[in-house]
Image 1 (spheres, one colour):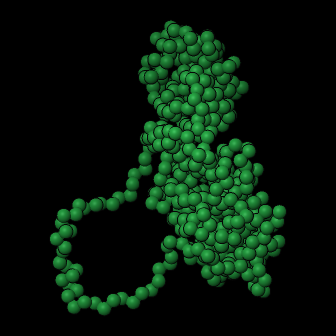
Image 2 (spheres, helix red, strand yellow):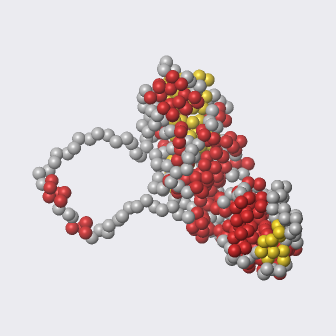
Image 3 (cartoon, rainbow, N blue to C red):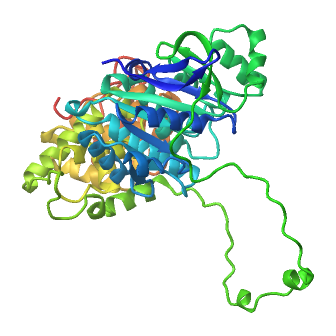
Length: 506
């Protein structure tokens, strides 16, 4: 079904139509400086398309919550745990409810994490719920920055990955991204490049004008026109809009933002006792505590994830059954353990899982466990890291039941969590009498491509009297474990065909 919504008027007075069905397949990018009318454009698009398609708005300033009064959008507060947001996003897709995720009041890193968790929850929905959804992201340069900023690298990667999934892989899952940004230069290129429709508004910087002209297929000399565009005027191009650049004046809207541009107001007449009013303190001022406002320090990811695991009862909702929401089935400890092991193996089966941080893997583990309705409290971060380390070591059932492996597990507690996978990999090879793993294989177990770092890890273990490294007459490396009374067979440290860590099933 072809549905054309009215976005405003063209230069000749004809209505400017936007094909919603085509937009769902080709996505949209909106650019304009602050005050150019981007939010007004997005509001017009949302209001006109509300009867035809489900909508999800990522709203960093809380401007779009007023849509709930007129069009019934559900308002979701971003001040929730990442597991809660992922669960809500999954149910949003199941029940086809339009919503606004408001991130007002959160600092930039918290906004990025909340938006990423919500987008990932929508992206990971079961295939049967892949209905078309218009996903509007205002101020997209915050969630898909072209360069790192003041936020942690982990938060930046998490948010950028979610935005990349939305724009690059979301179409097959019914997710149509509509992203708005103040500056194209601040937006990650791989995110902007996936849009086929463009609405370019007023901008002043040469680099932004040049990129806008390039995207619209215009001559560089015509880029100056973007500097002269009025508020609410945009140049449109794309299969859902027009096959050639056309100027559009965005039409009126039915709702309004809670915040608006400041208006000039005349100053009141100054009272005659103005000095007494200003310099005489109120007696209650001395009774009020002094609040020193400082920018919040970024919270460590491990603390957030640990809090997330403790908050499981609140995230799971009320204990009793809720209408419209299936309850988690009861299961035995054996069945629960089997499901958790299956989810963990599924995540680690991805070849790129070895190079992802534990916090990213843990978030994916929690989401998948909830999607499969694994009953009981979520696995704690410490236990998850331990299981990942053991799984990456490739230990088989026979070795896992031996006394030597139990001692190896005890010895691994002497090193930090991120090194346990490497230590157990070496210990397994020594217990089984296998060839010493190559530098490349050790590096992968640590989550890096650097062979030099792998050699430094062995030096670290040797400095702490956990292993002894020596070579045979052929120059092959042997790693001995004095506490276990075992050592590996000679192995070539420079081998390039031995980089895969065997699975436990092998």
